[in-house]
Length: 347
Image 1 (cartoon, rainbow, N blue to C red):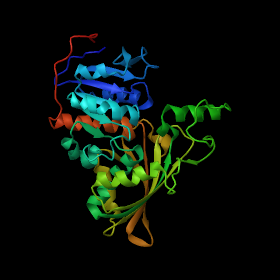
Image 2: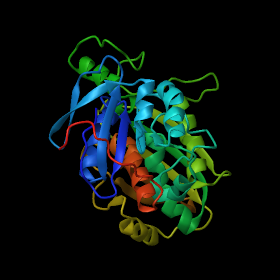
Image 3: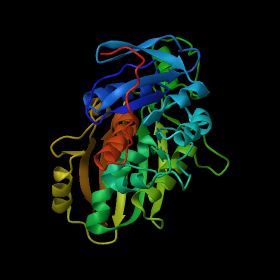
Image 4: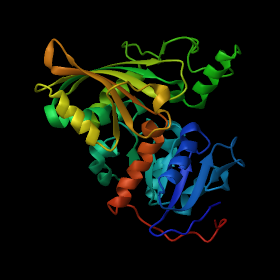
């Protein structure tokens, strides 16, 4: 079941939803960032059980998620299999001593589960009670971009329009757009409207707001720890495969010093600034940074600026942020380390 690796201060890692878009990227990011993995267990639905995924050149078997997986004794379990699975299994793994980092919406509003973007409020991860929530992909990149502004000038109001790729809906979104671009009828749809050559909204509720918009507005307040911040969002799905873009208008509490903000962004390890050109969804795909361009003053308000924020939603918006949470806990000595299992194939 496991693929053990010998490593100092290494951990037993489980990934639930391993065959999905984010799950496969989690495997890549763990390897790229050299996270200290002693053993790796991969889980998915019964439909995917028996398949294999690559880890350091080795084929790792994917197992069906059942309660018996909880007994194995993982140190960290990454969940990316949807809210229903997370609600059922995350508490079981946490009760067994694992730290759960959940990528679904299941725990984002739960006060007992910290909602964490490590560059913004990483200290909250240290307060977890077994489960840590990974925020919505659009919220993560927005929070990273806004934190330096909040620190320098204070935040009063944020208005954001998101331009989101279909990968935000997982493999189903990719499949629908691919089929439509080839002139075929999709087997599964994420929207009643065509995606190809179109712009669509997320499903809109009776109050006129989509769930995606409500996620951005509510999660941002919690991550920035600014409960009185005024936030308004409009979330749009566009027909490209990877990365999310956001047009952001920010009103601050104090006049904005644009050169000072630019300098702060340039010194930020997770932010890349485009000054001569602007970032695009295609140009940032595969990157773990949040890209910022088109920073400009609002001519009618010295306290307001506008900017264009782009990030890879599958990486920084999901998998990379989750791994960074585990890294933060590791660096602060907050992850338990169990002895490696004697089962499995040695690399």
